[in-house]
Length: 95
Image (cartoon, rainbow, N blue to C red):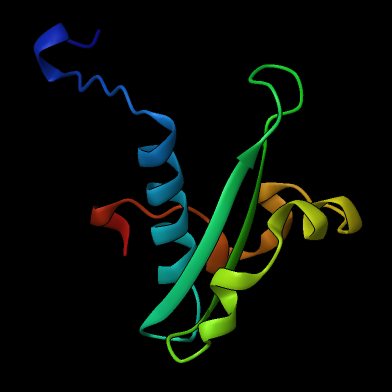
């Protein structure tokens, strides 16, 4: 049984959630240093989704893309398990 003193409880706002997701996705790319843009869309528990773009640090156009329009035209990448090992979450102890 887990001792409550061994638990870590987190509470993040929307900006923090987005930052965590973009940083994780950015770390999994081949860019090294990168630029990112993202948006959470939808209703939690119903149709919440993330649209994210990660690109080379020199790609200044990333911040000018219309994420809502891209999201409307784009299919899902697949389930988390379909993305392959490069995109699976690895805790700090598993890298």
